[in-house]
Amino acid sequence: MEMRGMMGGFYKLSEWIMRLSVTNVLWLLTSFPFWLMVISFLGVSDTEQLKANIIFLAIVAPFTLFPATSAMFSVARKWVLGDTDVPLLKTFFRNYKQNYVQAMIGGIFYALLFAVLIIDFQVYLKQMTGFQLIAYLFIALMLLLLISLLHFFSLLSHFHMKTIQLLKNALILTIGRPIRSLIMVIGAAAVLFLSTRFTFLIPFFFGSVIAVYTFYNFNMVIQKMMLMKEESETKKSDESDSEEEGQKQI
Image (cartoon, rainbow, N blue to C red; front, top):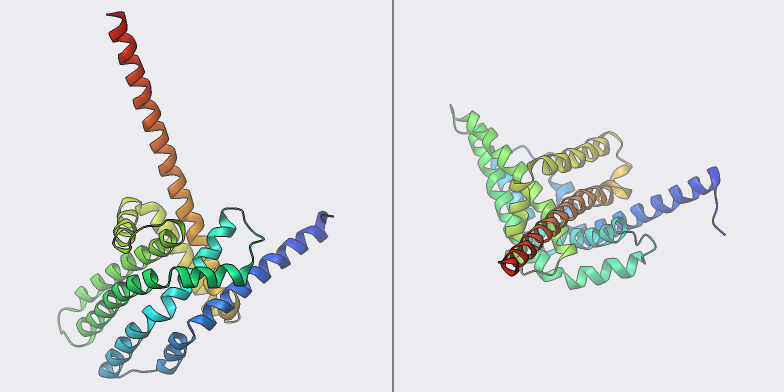
């Protein structure tokens, strides 16, 4: 029997809190080595040590953080598409295993680029006198790379493609849909900001909320693109039918 009214609302809210928190905990546990290194590196101020730490994180991330995030996005995809009662543990670990190799390869690509951009940012900001302005160019590039990364995870969870196609399409969506990409990154930044103010969100909601929000926006883009494609094909079909009728009349 379905609960209605206020009690029904509380019940649905508690269900979503449970789904988001369980998925977020699974994500943190399966990427634990990466986050452990992040915590141990906090407070480092020496530039050379910071560079070394960034390199270590770039090495660990593809084998831990990226497969875990891919699995989390696969669960978020199920929710956004309406399958809210999907078994969390089974879905998470099945997709963790299935997408591990592609997530790892994509992770190597993104981790390498992020490491290069972060190190270059530090160098131009602190060591290149008179070139500090160029450092902010690297911030813009990192922002674009982050948006592309979010698209990559959404594509990986939604389509069966080769890794190179996933990377290519992630870049196309980032550049080709600038407004939606901007909305996506603003929402993710808002969740990050709230998590820094209310730290209890980090272990239970930080990653899973971003995954749901990101895939929701991604799905809107895909649905719109599919609708435009259908309209274009219908228009071509109608024009073709009109030409055939004209030829018959002649």
